[in-house]
Image 1 (cartoon, rainbow, N blue to C red):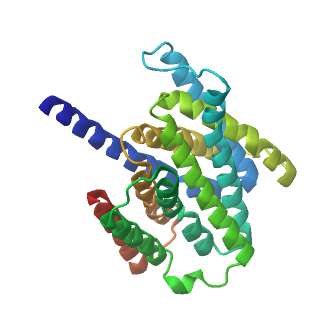
Image 2 (tube, rainbow, N blue to C red; image 1 turned 120 degrees about the vertical axis):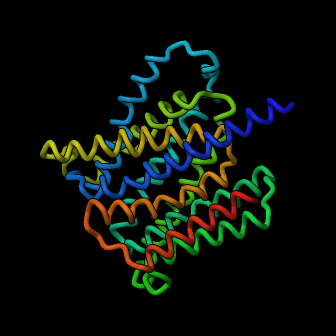
Length: 296
């Protein structure tokens, strides 16, 4: 019994580390997107399409690994493809919202995914939600508001753009929830290949319909796309998918509120965008909220 408890605690610590690293990797995605030479929808398509390279390569290297269950029947195939559909809508809505409303509004509203995920878990699966977790969730979201400049920075946005950003948050919550339900049945790599491939299939027509050109013009442009695909998606999403086998989806989505904190730090280091006292306080509040929720 003691050994089993110790093993579970070890897995939880490793999953927590993977979740934080995954959130940090995805937090770098705005930098790659900002520096990309392709349009926003084309960048989203290449993000998932190029990520298939390391995912498939890794799958071939570990071919036949024990415990990697194969899908059986149409329901399994649909379940494996569904997270990619959610992710494609999330990415498309997020990029569209950035062109319609303020960056502050789009970023904050798109980070409401933990709220939707907590509500969905309670409504669909009657998952217990403690008061401590709710307090941590509220604290972390307040930290994101402060990080983005406080309530005053949220004015001036377009109502339709704000609504689309909320749609992005809802579909990202659906993505995390679908991944979490699959982790008890399939391996991380199998889930990632199927969800990434289905996201690429869904993103391609969006990119073809909205972009004049799909390809970057320089080696630097391709480097940004490969960085986005390999680091943020293949690296970040794989780490998060692994963590969801051991941690509740609601808490996992809350920890991903680290993403805007990481993005602000990277923008400061790489793009010389200043980080003021408001951003520092906001980041500290987000971390405090996550720590509170962890106790719940």
